[in-house]
Amino acid sequence: MRFEAGQHAKLSQQMKLSPRMIQSMEILQLPILALQERVDQELESNIALEVVEGEQADQPPDEAGDSGGTEEMVVGEAGDGADDFERLSDLERDYSEAADNEYSSSSYSPSRHAGERDRKQDAMANLEGRGASLGEQLLHQWTFAEVDEDTAAAGALLILSVNDDGLLGTDLESILEQNPDALSTGMTVPRLETALEALQHWLEPPGLAARSIQECLILQVEAMKSQGEDAVEWDTVRELIEHHLDDLVQNRLPKITESTGLTIDQVRDAMTAMHRLNLAPGRDLINVEVAPIIPDVIVDYDEQSDSYVAALCDGVLPPLRVSPRYRSMSGDEAFDKETRSFISRNVSNAEWLIESINQRSNSLLRVVNVVLSRQRDFFDIGPQHLKPMPMVDVAEQLGVHVATVSRAVSGKWMQTPRGMVQLRRFFSGGTETSEGENVSWVAVKAMLGEIVEAEDKSKPFSDELLAAALKERGVDIARRTIVKYRQQLGIPPARLRKQY
Image 1 (cartoon, rainbow, N blue to C red):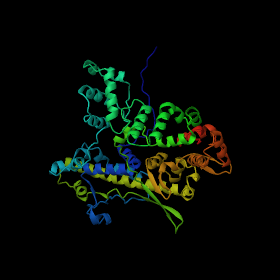
Image 2 (image 1 turned 45 degrees about the horizontal axis):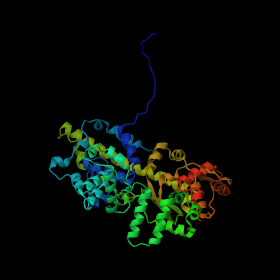
Image 3 (image 1 turned 60 degrees about the horizontal axis):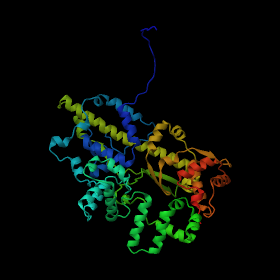
Image 4 (image 1 turned 45 degrees about the vertical axis):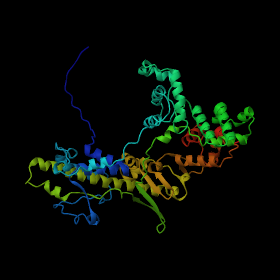
């Protein structure tokens, strides 16, 4: 084996994204609520970024305050966005020296130096406290149970194994094996069984601490009976749950009637009563925070022009500008070099954020206008007429990179006359009908849902018949594709859709 050392010249091209450009792309991708949070963070950390207050918000930039001879930058004063990110690149070159300064706006808070109240601390102090977990709530309930000390200790141990659905996540033997300290104190399986029975009696809502879905439902049925509900009806429900639960799940109602002597109507009435039961009673005690959906774009129909008009829903964002005072201080020789460098960095950060927000608005609005022009049938008729629209085609039409389009629509919602729609929904592939019309896969799924909704429930369509029904509408797709779309839409197979 021979080793050689030498020098070689190699010419190559590499494209690297600067931190500034990465930040601008992140701003473009943020939904409106996340953008609002980002702006709030910058207002806390950047001394040069400020909100335009009162009448100044309605004044032109040159009247809102002295800019020190430099053009004022205000959120909302965006251009036409013909060349995405070009102005951002110019801005980065102009402020590259300040951007490389060792000082960071995020490490400086004016309130800490001016003796003012910390607004971030005040906001955190006003936040609602964390709600109690399921385990904490169950332990609190268990303290009121009238049981002896040994049973109370065993019950507290069992509560630790209750999952978020409210069911016991493991068997009693495993619970003992996983807690050797409990074994050393004389804890046994019979004691755990006694405690489990007490837990199921004392804990609310009924069904908590059950060892299975079946036991959970039976506990709830017994609670219904004890509350004076129709005993005959709930006796039937209990019999079906205890002995025919699998047949119920598989919709084998004739088999149930044959083995129980009940009529189809009696079984259906019992199934209706089962809808009052809860498969996961623990979820009733957990506060699940669902984030509100705030649209980034609002689309309305203009009768005069017979067209759909889009407007950005950016009213939750405060009007921002670069502080004229700090802009002038960044070039004031009366301050030392370190102070000027720190202020310059904050000014450049503020300008970059404002420019990124304006560019986000331009890019988003341009993409939405393309959607309105290409998907007119969707807004006029419905989702069944959604057309294929790859992002590559939109990017070529706008003269931007496809990644810009992808980030512009990511996580965004659009309020339309047909309801709230995810912007990304309009971008999909599709197929061609027998009549030569292009339809998107989203439209095909909508057609499939319509066919299933209109079918005879006593004789539901099989997947082969669903494919044939779509073919009659001009869409020829394979049965396996039907199965995939049906599962995505949450439509069960024909045997489970059948009604007796």
